[in-house]
Image (cartoon, rainbow, N blue to C red; front, side):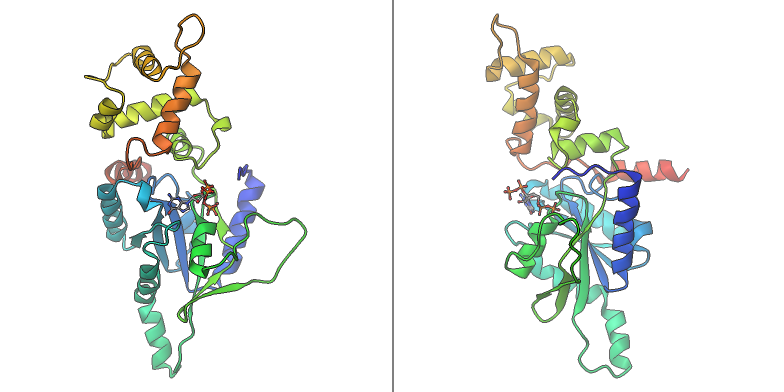
Length: 293
Ligand code: G4P
């Protein structure tokens, strides 16, 4: 699904989430575990106001496990509970209910103290940028195909709740929010993880960005996969080497750079380099500090 975000769309998306806030106790903010910073909505704090939230690092199966731990710690230092999940395989979902109880304990204890005997189920809504796995998670939690992808124009339907056991009720439509696409680095990370379509970007730029990232964060994997002693500084040399290795050659023996770029990106996306996390908590902390100054 490709969504183009214009100011009008953003305002509408924001309004839709805001309207539903009063119906729920807790927000499940879904992010991609490979890019927990880049896959967040830039205005999320403002949009959800003071509503309790649980951050879900989805697609944890594709992310670097050590980094995922660092991200959970990063959020916990900001007093935000985060969990790693794999919505596709249904891993980590039980913890969602437990963590929600923990986060809302005080609120529900207050209800009990007021004499409410059987506190109702916790009500939640999933929010996140496109492709982060919202529908997959809803379907998993519902254990059947309830979540519909996309909207049917002109059809307004009543709010539906999906029961997840006895203790949780989930709004059947997730809140779709926009990513921080004005930031080029973020755009590259969204593209290399497949959150935004290739057509929006120059594939060679994306391949260069990805190679440079791998060189910095996972140099050994890069060298092994492309049989390199050292990673050459010169990009043409690097592309020539990879192109030749993979047979991306045009008639006349010249390296086909477009094909080479496509192949590099495809290999990263299909986990040929193993699980990778593109956002690093300490880098993000320094961005936030710089923004505050
Ligand atoms: P959305 O509603 O937020 O837009 O996302 P959606 O559920 O449609 O998921 C987007 C893609 O991410 C889907 O793949 C889905 O299968 C995949 N996905 C969701 N959760 C996980 C996860 O925890 N791990 C992994 N590895 N993938 C996940 P797709 O290629 O669009 O479709 P398909 O491969 O399922 O056919």
